[in-house]
Image 1 (cartoon, helix red, strand yellow):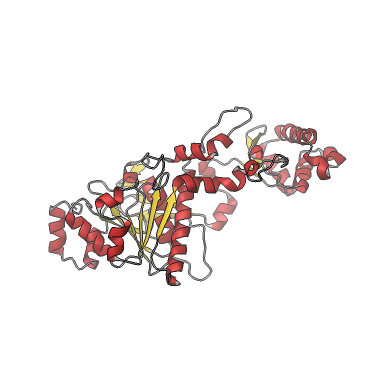
Image 2 (cartoon, one colour):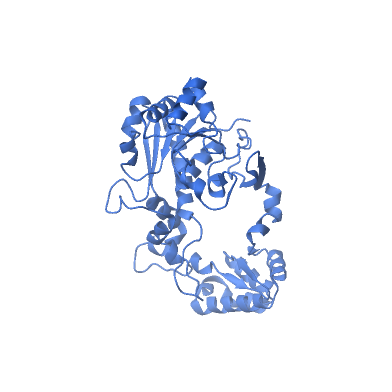
Length: 397
């Protein structure tokens, strides 16, 4: 069945994670995404870690469902081709530093002359202007500037740390994909084309804010802060490993005490009503849980906590994730086979549609795999395609 974005064409010139993942989300929902890659080796993520037979895992994980054309945009012929592609496009995505697209001749004003109602989507690190605008920006830098690193403190090792994956990049991707669909919806209602701008700094802060900045959201000296969720992002040591517990309500907290055999404390008046949030009672409850879990194996603790309806989970290794019963039941991990780079896995798109569910999208393309196919759609003959290759406008076979 066709996805909800079937009929929408996206031109994606972005690289690495923030832009490519956003475009892949649109592809997963039915859009025809044409990935325009620079000459020689394609976009940067193709050269990064976990590489086999022309495919890097990072590139694969951000580029399912796209068609790839290799194009040298620093040539007049390459620029002409992207202008031709834009004539039938709905969305253009780039994630370069401010001014880079304009220097190449593919800034918003350049493209709007060709396609007035284009949705022009750009990602910058810090914004289009301002004191940091010209700096290079990467995920750990934005984590440091927006509070993530400061919040990643284990009381046992009270030193700030980073979230060890590109959380700000991915927050930017999902923010952009949602904003692009909103802009397309507005265009359908007569708003015309517009420029969607996202700064990774802003996306990172917005994503962190709802729970990460609780202490700084209600602004007054008399605001009470009895509980900060970040302080419960802890792993409890068991006899043979660790387990994560999230007792988010009073009933769950008391149930946790019962699960570790402390029914006496669970039924104590200190664990009822407003008395629960008094510091001494919180400390007593935490100590009882820590001491109780430490006497149990991870498997026994998990069983007991689930029996008492306390949210809990063992700390799964990456390979154990694939065997988790709920992940297997949901079909959350998909597998495929490519003729060149072989077997691959991907996460199933999280959004599932009851009516317009896109079928599984195509495997990530090899560099320039669809160049001739896309050029043919523009009316180029085989001889013209060969001439473009000879001039270095498109990749050699």
